[in-house]
Amino acid sequence: MKNNYEKRIPFMSLTVTLATSVLVYILNIPSPNVVLLTVLVYFTFLGGYLSGTLSGIVTILFTIYRFMEPNQLFSYSDDNLKRIIVSVIFIPLMILIVGYMKKDLLDKNKELEKANEDLRKLSITDSLTSIYNRRYFDEVLTDELRRSERLNIPISLAIIDIDFFKEYNDIYGHIAGDNSLIAVAQAIMKQVQRTGDFAARYGGDEFAVVLPNTTLDGAAVVCERILRSVRDLKITHGATKEGILTISMGIAVCDESRIYEGGSLINDADQALYKAKKKGRNQYYF
Image 1 (cartoon, helix red, strand yellow):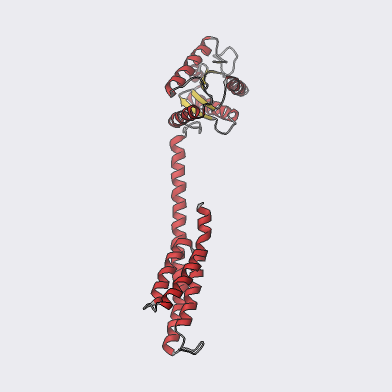
Image 2 (cartoon, helix red, strand yellow):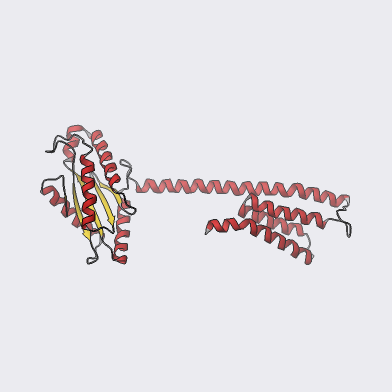
């Protein structure tokens, strides 16, 4: 919509300037060039160089016509010729100045929009793993639960915990622990593939995955892929029976027959995660 409007501005500039020229001529308005220059400045600032050029051409042609000697085509007195020369120089100069101001303003607006977007990304991104953070997870989960209820569609939530992560830090150090968090986060992200699916760092060594419009069977497929993806990293972990770093997952599914608040769904996923750990870890549990 906005792009279509911007494309129409040059046409509007030409049309309005022509109409204004006719109007000031018919009404014999004093100082008509002041009126036309006001129109020119307005449309140059509104639409940039192209709009200003179209309006400027009309204004120059009107000036050439206006200062002609009565009943003498293209005949001018010395004073009127000077006025025309000044107009022909002044009008393009004004278009250049106002057009530059317009372009500079647009450039600054783009820089500001980019800075705001970068700031927004920083505010919703976990600084270590570069995936979404807990704050944004809370926003997304609330929105998706509302959408689920409104459209009467299921939604699944998985809470993921790295097995024996404290022991991993004790054995290999915190730098290795941070690197493993980054690797696990990227492994999870690779398996969250559909538009609308969402993964975030939930806190510490925990992650969360929101799967809108996903039933128990669909959630099981995604969770199995995530488990396998983390195992395939083959990160050595001496405190697990597998000898590699693994994860446990708790999954809660809200279908159309149940209405959930965010806390309730998280609590159910947490309970499922607890049972997955109790059953031996390196697995998911509904």
